[in-house]
Image 1 (cartoon, rainbow, N blue to C red):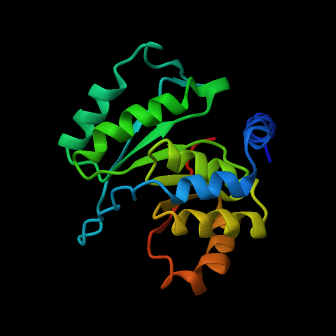
Image 2: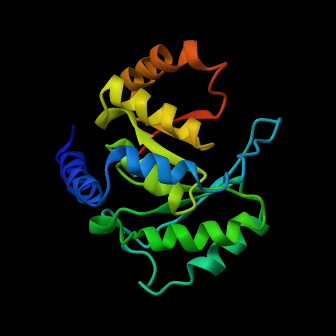
Amino acid sequence: MSDFLDLMVQSSRERAQALLAMRTDDGWRTAAAEVPPPPILQLDPSGFDLIAEIKLSSPSEGVLAAADADVAARAETYARAGACAVSVLTEPSRFGGDLTHLETAAAVLAAHGVPAMAKDFLVEPCQVAVARLAGAGGVLLILRILEDDRLLEMLDLARALGMFVLVEAFDADDLERARRLFGPRHAAAPATLVGLHTRQ
């Protein structure tokens, strides 16, 4: 992994441990299973869909929007413009994200039947459950930072909670790993999408 990914993983692990200090992994899963199901990801049969993004800051570009940006208005605009989903950054240390942004966007998007996707460097199943509790209908999972067993555990949890998964790959080796892991599971997990990361 790159130094940047190492830092993001460490930060995410610390946030996951804070969650597990509040409630057990099973406790988070049970709570998430009790909330109403999220909107279902609707994909265009023609093969072209757009996932819009709400991101206030980027390590490469700096501040992109004010801390008090109107997340609700942006989510509304994206939904009306035809986005099939809206990715919401929740990583706080380098991307200015917060779970409240996800909660706000998800509440707006639900009225349009559009799922919100939690975009973060998730490393523990409890983080998938917490994203669902915040209203997410999907999560990003990054191949490069997850071992096979943990990746599949988080994928299965997301599916059990009615969520779609966008799996991020960085190169041809990651894509081959995705083919190996998800090829036999595709029929059972049609809402698993694999996207290639094109800029580090």
